[in-house]
Amino acid sequence: MDNNQFTIVIPCKNEGINIYDCLGFICKQKGIGNTRVIIADISDDEESLNWLYRAQIDYKYSINIEVIKGGYPSKARLEGSKLVDTPYILFLDADIMLLDKSVLNIISGFKGDLLTVPFQTEKGWNWVFRLFDWFQILSIKLGTPFAVGGFQYWNTQTYWDLGGYKEDELFAEDYSLSSKVKPKKFWIHKSNGVFTSARRFKKKGISYMFWIMIKSYLNRNNPEFFKHHHNYWK
Image (cartoon, rainbow, N blue to C red; front, side, top):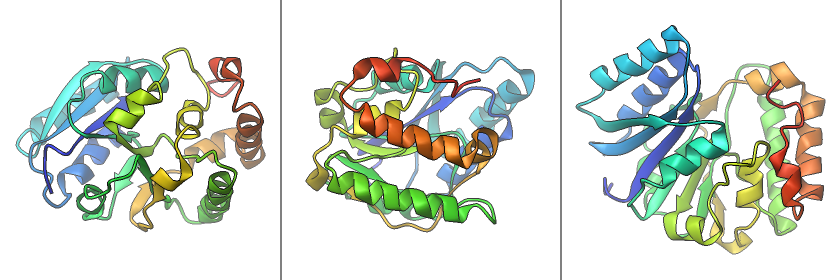
């Protein structure tokens, strides 16, 4: 894997041990040596800050960690992306665990515009993500690909050509951007080793989460829709 092929950008706020574990799994990736990882952080609790500091110490010989000021996910990703000088950017959330040690090595050979992966989660909740997979395939057929911001591997030039993340978008900013990609340039890498928690579905409810996906699609050409949080951050 070419360590200058991509930069990883991670938005972070009060993630506790999640950010430490996330970075730990990155360090275990094949060929990851000294890859640049930008963490756009606005944590304000001591525990999270301590875990982030510990990660910088423990992993400094495996990856090149840089911490900058972040914000809401869209602003955090934007600020991180401004510093990227590699051909590709991987936007990764702090609660994404790369259990498959070869996933980054494999996707580093991708030559399209945007790549994502399916997610595995806690026992009893995987069916929700499999249902989301169906919605994702449907989005491609409808010409508006949906890649969750938790794992978006972008061609950097395409990312900027499409406008990049917009800091005033507070809701479904990942779909707002990924929907602009040409379906033929979008790819879903079928890894079974990318894990995330089901906390969003547990907190907001399954019906709400799928309803916002439908609303996002219906408002895909309405920029103002994405500038309101729609109670998502409450």
